[in-house]
Length: 97
Image 1 (cartoon, helix red, strand yellow):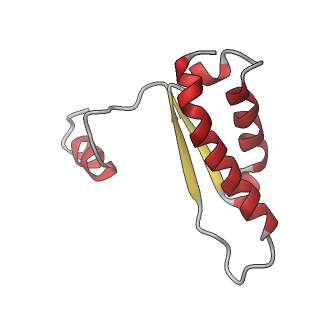
Image 2 (cartoon, rainbow, N blue to C red):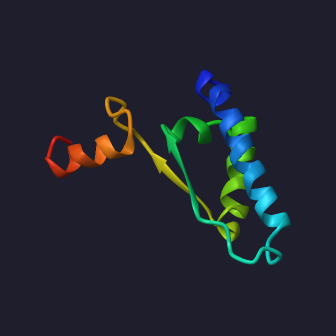
């Protein structure tokens, strides 16, 4: 298991916990919960080893998350020089990417 997998475990656990909490309340809330997007940077590192705990968490997240409004996007590289999404969007609008 790589160090990337170890650092991803708490995040994947938190996302899966959100999915489980939403599934428990599905149909009982007056309004549906807003959608949540989980973006996985360097996602290939998480899927390389099928025996890793990160692979199992990701599989469960992908199979159960969509029904409760949790979407997963896998990216091969996410620009890290932009601290916020607004800065990234501004750079894209100016053609800096």
